[in-house]
Length: 108
Length: 116
Image 1 (cartoon, rainbow over the protein chains, first blue to last red):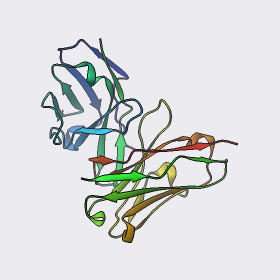
Image 2: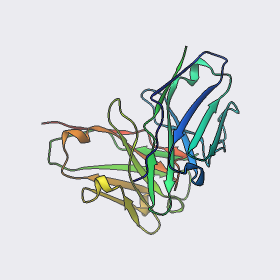
Image 3: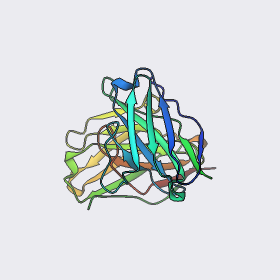
């Protein structure tokens, strides 16, 4: 089965840029989606199809995907961005969804 | 506005079954897949499967094959996820999410506790 690997934690100072990676075999050939989840809340889609932003998501959130790594980039990080972030792909050949293990973003 | 409203918390004994509902509003229910995702306390998101509300077709994660059943009632725009042979490891928050490939809209979650 397909495996997505994320770092357990990333720390960043306010105002700086956070980059959260998601590794997978030839992930660049798949569409990657990213979710933000704060404690006690349902996940929120922040990036879909590698780099598209749903309405209401700040432009500070961006995504890229190439080779074996997809990246979620959060610019000008704010305290309110502190959350768990999950990458996810849809394997169309098997019709399965796969989530990464999640990354806890800490704003110092 | 699109909303997915799930049923309330459940407490079940080991070996029992649980059926969680997800009522959709604000869009045409049969136009989008419904996925089910669960999350144990302090753990990550775990995909359970999807259902096409129009056709009733389903796809289940291998881990849950034989234990999970996803159904729908189109007349009331509601999707259901039933999990049988519950064990303590099934204690988690269960979410429904709309969409194929990615979840743009999510329910609020339903806590299922399995305890003797």
